[in-house]
Length: 81
Image 1 (cartoon, rainbow, N blue to C red):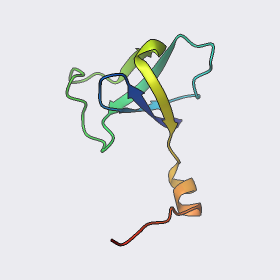
Image 2 (cartoon, rainbow, N blue to C red):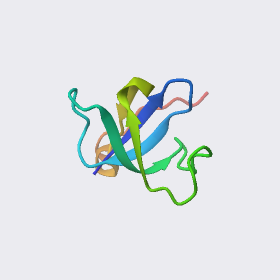
Image 3 (cartoon, rainbow, N blue to C red):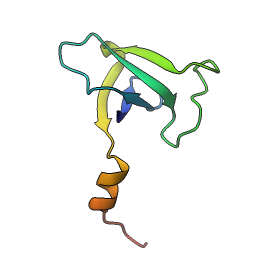
């Protein structure tokens, strides 16, 4: 299972869990467990919905998020400002 952050045109990004990364030949992205970037419920998705389909024309770009193992192995630098 891969977690991605899809950036939707004129909407806030949505985190999804997908089986495989989308291919260029796909017409849509099908994902489970839709949530906001901070893991809260998405307000414009009905309660109880656990699978969504987004057509490519609504998506501007996709970020592939690291797994917990990858985060532990390669910590990201940070600043104390």
